[in-house]
Image 1: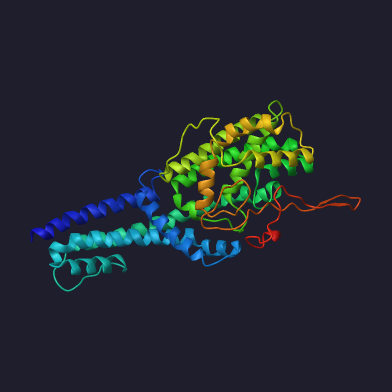
Image 2 (image 1 turned 180 degrees about the vertical axis):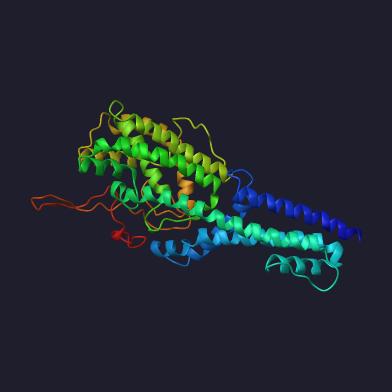
Length: 385
């Protein structure tokens, strides 16, 4: 009999802990205390990552990974309900006489309309509480979905605009090049301002609702991580190359952008250097940086510093976000864009953004060009991206 009441106490602990996790995950807008949700998300992600290894083209991998977020939401709900069954099953043990009967009655009451009884003695108060718990949990999960998809839609609206601003996949130098090619460099301050606000909203939504990290863009070659990285690289290049003419919005965008990466990393319990030295090394090489500067000069982007003089300033900015951006890009299996780091689960060559031919009224066509040559064996049909 003593063991039954010990089980009752264990059941109370399980129910209280699970109820706390439900409130934190679905009601309380805080990133702290979501370890259960993070564990579920991690497990679901690993399953889909393993499945995606069966495919080679990137588009196919993306299609396999696309359901990860919705499935994680479903598994989270089922996990909450399963834990409630276990907890209430232990609590019913003193009355049912056997733990198996307690678990059975808890399961029947939780997954049926109204209450359910099994043969033998029971506790009507607990049975009614079980039925109410199931209804409340499912209702909270349903009410939680509009917030998730609303935040997802707001995130993707600005990401979709990056196709014309930075190509697909997005790349920082391409942002400056495209604005120069069509003569709208004066629009860059507004771009930086929009992405500062976007980064603030994403840092809030993706720490409050970590499952959003598993939601992929509707288009295979879009990625919110690459888009933010491209804008930050463009802002850092602008400040490094044009110290007197670069807009102040570039500095504000950079500050909010790497703060967003850090907040998301903190919510995932990643370790990182919160105050790296400006002279700290980068994974990006000076040769890659210099080649991008040559391309900017070839497109007549106005610069005030050469590559060697600008490099320490660019490095001083990029050191604040490079490592976290690379890790996030790898975690979400973002497209293999230039300057975005390696992908453990995505072997293959870097795919540069495709720039459409520049057509003029006189009928002349300037073909596309890239700082990176096209791989002889592309990761997928990126030529159509």
